Amino acid sequence: MSPLVARLKSGGLIETILMTLVLLCAVLSIAGGRKALVGLVLVAPAAIGEWLIYWRPELLIYVVTRGAGLLFIGFVVVQLLRFIVYAPRVDSEVLCAAIAGYLLSGLAWSLAYALLDRLDPTSFAFTLAPKSGQSMDSFTGLYFSFITLSTVGYGDIIPVSEIARMLAMVEAMFGMFYVSLLIARLVSLYSSKSPPESHDSRNS
Image (cartoon, rainbow, N blue to C red; front, top):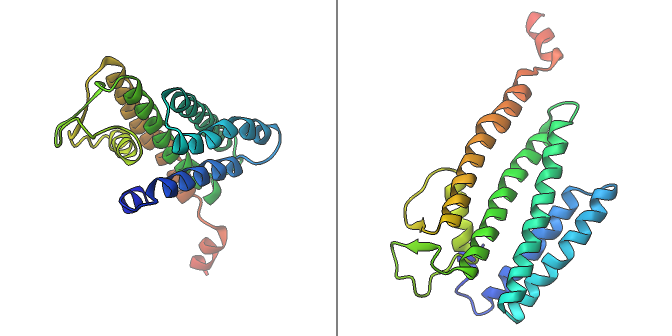
């Protein structure tokens, strides 16, 4: 929704609300037991920080908020992967968890890029527009993250610093192995289990 609301007068407020909803929904995805309590403890500074950034976008608040967001989303992704690995059977819920883990991973890297760009504005080069007015915050960081995660790489944003290149390299490898190993394996297992009744009906 970011590109659609960015030009509105209250675009920043809408983006903050949407990001808060994403964080809260991520807590619901791991609801149950102590992990939900840990999730609430981790999401609190991230969600509150989103509103602090909206009202007072200071460097310290930004760093703490993005760091808390990274920690929380990383925790959620780990819990989703644990759910997938230990699931007794592959069903639609497991497949949805795998997809959610993939999408949240892209969101986590976008926060890392935004944080790095705020700490070192020379970490990324924008080839289609001057550097002034360009940053890895909001939709731009999310766009670059998913382009890197899917190993597309249009070349309009280039990681320049060594840390930025390392993050992009690790994300590209993660995305490649995640899709090729986890998603493909789950889909193959899910599709290979045909209902017994359909087999009996064909024989009759």
